[in-house]
Length: 373
Image 1 (cartoon, rainbow, N blue to C red):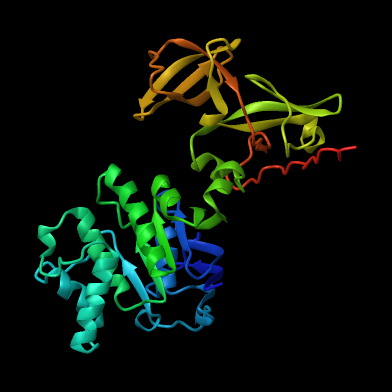
Image 2 (image 1 turned 90 degrees about the vertical axis):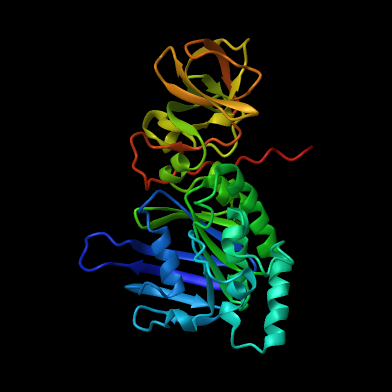
């Protein structure tokens, strides 16, 4: 691994809970990792510890085979050859774009320095803008200048701390896709902090979900969504609810009884013996619930959020359970209206009833079809 963090903890004074608590992760060369979680979860502290701006209390950080922190030894930030991009860009307002970018490579000969400035400006799509001042640029252009300045010294690792938080929502997601392309074109290895899931999904090869200083899961976006490692990840990523369920054997098939009726032909579902009397809670994502006027189960619309191509409806069944569903926006139903719904669940994720945030789902049993005769 290009970056290897092992059992890293950061404590401030004698406080009871560590800001970062026993975090381990690995990032291959050329990959982009993203840390996501609620405010105060420790993601920025972890980033600053990797940068050398915070001293680790214990654990180890290895960068490109070199130990930069092991609880006793602490390599200063300026010796780690790490680039950083901050959320406020930190551009010098009195310097033009070219001189802002050249600031970190001032020791290079003038011709080599000018060539590198031209190279990174070309990379971030701002060729020919050397003479512009920061206030003459849009927010997205300023962010790209900050990225170009961080890339100019050819750091071995690039760290980005909520770099799009000052931009509007539409620009954030678009710029995240652009930055992903820029970092891949540069062959950069990067670790990125955000609170925005769309940004994380747009830019990250691997995403880490943090909560109360702990890293709950470090995985690809698809796995976080469909195979969450803990109840917190299941709740934090995407839209969904936990509904009461009972797992039963019907003949030789496992069936999950839910408020929407039984789920049949489910793969990798726990056996009924995994829970007392088979009673559990099943994760139902918004995309697991399908609007179907002909379905026998009806639900009342409590809230609706327009998302352009779709609505996110919050629904309540007659039995009181609350669900969520994505519905194409031409199905414009009123709040209070009853609509038909049915479940289409490909990935069944179940938890013990009343389990806490750190509780893992009970693993399912992979059932392989019988070999053809």
